[in-house]
Amino acid sequence: MSEAIVVTPSFPKKLEQEGACLTTNQMPFASKAIAWLVLFAGILLSFQLIGAVEPLTFGSAHILAVVLGAFAYLIFTVVHGFLVDRHNWALQRAAREKSRPFTFRFGPEGFEIDARNSRTDYGWDAIDEVAALTGGTGVRVGVFVYPVADADLPEGMSSEDFRAQLDEWRGA
Image (cartoon, rainbow, N blue to C red; front, side, top):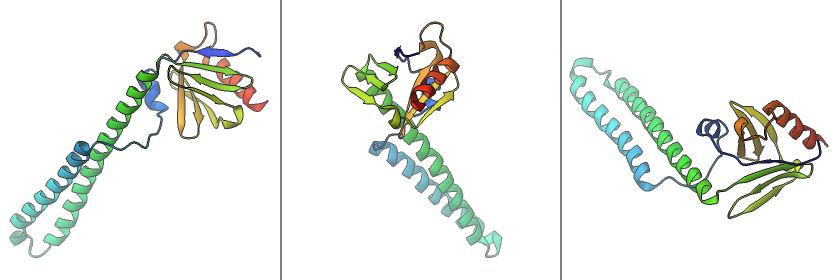
């Protein structure tokens, strides 16, 4: 097949999460503050528990303090990670909404992204990977994965045929 495949991606949330784009934008201060408050609350709670249990532990309170501090840091890491992920997804969705409508064009010469506010052309040598995702295909360029849902493919084209065609063009 030498004719181009043009796709208007719908970016289903599940597919988008599986082929998540990476971002370097910073999380807002309020979210960082919440994560740090959780850490400090855990540390203060561990001090309170140590003060209450120390007379009963016959000197082994330091081990308990280390365990409680590690647990507080674990909770901090989980809360901070959740807030960072949530922030990054919101940034990506907002940027994508500003750029709609999108079109992906795949052809013998490469991969093009045409959006309302930008146009990007990639030669096949820039495409690092074409991967099967649940319900679609991911086209990876560096740290970015562009998801193409099976439902967005041209009528009569399966995701296996789509990936095979992309791999053929990549290998040419």
